[in-house]
Amino acid sequence: MSGNTQIGALSTPFSCDTFDDYIWIADGALEHNPEWRRGQAYFNTLAAFHPEVAEQFRGSLTDPFHNDSKLPAFLDAVREWFE
Image (cartoon, rainbow, N blue to C red; front, side):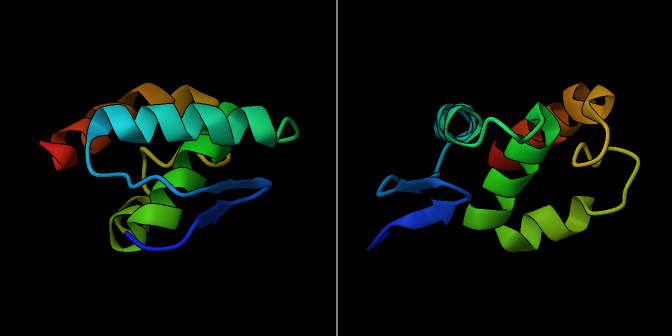
C-alpha cells in the first residue's frame, strides 16, 4: 500500500492485511480519536482499509458503529473474513 490511510485523527502508513494488523490499527485509531466509541473505531478502521467489507456489515445485526455490544460478533465475522 502506498501513502497513508486516514482514520479520523490517525494517519497510518501501515497496511491492514491480517486480523492482527486490523486490531492494532483500530486500537491506534481509538487512541487518536478519544471521542469515538470502540465500535466506531473498529468499524471506521475496516471501512478505511476494506470499504467493500465494511459495507457488508453496515446496518446489519453485527454493525458495532452505534452499539458497542455488537462488537464481539462483528470481530468474529471480521476475523473469519481475514482468514
